[in-house]
Length: 178
Image 1 (cartoon, rainbow, N blue to C red):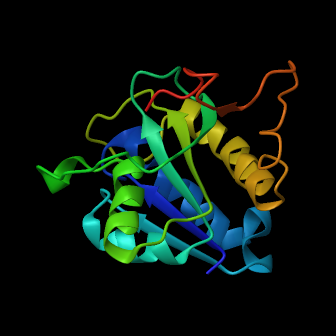
Image 2 (image 1 turned 135 degrees about the vertical axis):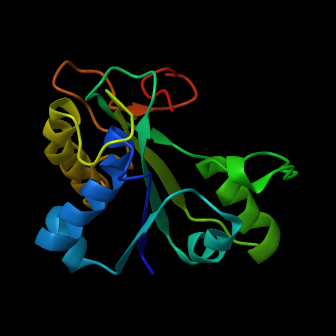
Image 3 (image 1 turned 120 degrees about the vertical axis):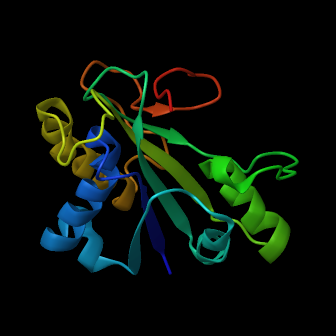
């Protein structure tokens, strides 16, 4: 498959379900060009080792998750590299880099590109539905996914309206705190 989108979160924990809402919007409207390329969208409560096979089969992977501690409603994208030497101690704490590392170590293949798109969470209390801030961020998140699809982020990491990159890179840390 060309692109794999993994939306992670819990829709019964307020803004933690923002990934699922973005995935739903992409599926319902075929937004961001999803219908135009080979794309699979998966919504999960947490990242698990079983996802490594799908990750290994994709050219591009986009992980979507809420970011606790980030500015509520802030949408950011960062490049993900495989964790250097991954030795799992407990599978309930896998992040995107660890999942890409499992794909590398078990299937001997990693995606050419991997990204984490995160949306700053306002609340992750037990509740159904997103806060108004997170709900307002969903269309922007879909737009950023569209930028990844169109490869506008890939060669030069894109440029925001203020002239700064919208993607965290090793030389520009801190744009996305997840």
